[in-house]
Length: 340
Image (cartoon, rainbow, N blue to C red; front, side):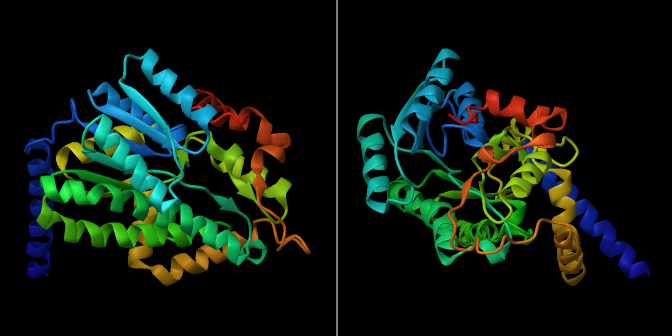
């Protein structure tokens, strides 16, 4: 018992020392540096771009929707932020290399890459096809790899730079009805941690972010399959409730702080931390519990497997457009997430 007690005190003091050293340690200066944010036209990407810009960084936003991208750039410019918008698709390997080359030729070296671009497909695994999985992997895994491979040669040569990979609690615990998303985020997290271990010898930092469900108002852009009305409505509700979801502003502040302090892995939000810890300690129990949760979720729609995943905004009804989703609707308006 005495040995266990000493071990506990040693771990506690060691953890406290780590936190203190992190807070008192040298910060990475952000002012004047260039940040490239993928998926920067809306949601968390836009919030991060704004907070980075407010710290004096020159921000480059990239996303596929040019109109949405220009709205984001104009909003940042109105706040006095030096922002550039460049349309781009992270699934296009050569396109990302060209985009980064253009940035570095005309603006300067990319000091910070934020891999934030993503999609989310909602529905039972019975409704998902191989193409759904490929689409998720191409965007969230290979898209991040394409962007990182475009900036890494310059970062290694300069022996400085930071790459932030935004994963999800779905990268640590498999969440029912999000199978393609979970698969891509699990892959992203594994690659991100391995890259971080290897890039350190070149002076490059890699920060793996594991956030819980965030309240960005992005539920309208989710792609639903199966019983679409039920899936869209339930996802909208869950994505708007304050005790379940994480405020995007708070999440962005935490990510920026992680960049400044050179952290490596950051789990954001109490629900995400508790779920990740429980899964680490009792993985079988958590999987069984999620199996019970799955029984309460909408079942597959007959002959729906080959159907196309469609935006949830087309199917939200009733409670999904009520006071229960008011916070989510407000976030959608604030973070450029309102569907066209």
